[in-house]
Amino acid sequence: MIEIRKIRAEDTWNLRHKVMWANKPLDFVMLPNDSDGFHYGLFKNQQLVSVISMFVNNNSGQFRKFATDKTQQGNGYGTQLLTFLIEEAKSIGLQELTCDARVSAVTFYERFGMKTCSEIFQKSGKDYVKMIVKID
Image (tube, rainbow, N blue to C red):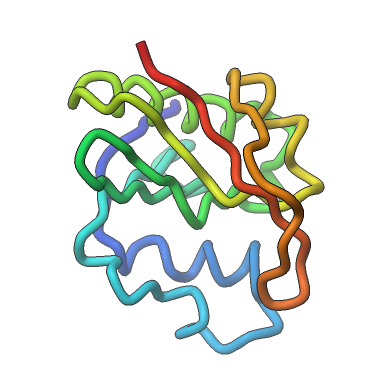
């Protein structure tokens, strides 16, 4: 059974760490403004397999630290979670949603109507671009 629900920031940290930055200390994936965000988890049979965090500023949202357990990737869980997040953003009246996407994931985000809106930049040795989708 698949369930998506709000979770606490600290519930995202282990999965963020394991998937995104396993070679860094755990506090590397803890955001200074985590307490200000909305955090969601996708659970498969009550096991947390995907997480995403959204931070709202006026009519714009930014999602960060989107991670799906490597053993569960390719099963559509990330797609379900991002689709859910876009609907959440729409329901609270946001006009756009942005993210800093790893260049390797751009085609994934394009499937959701996201467009690249920056040059490539680096964070911690990885290549990223800013992406945006308008919400109607």
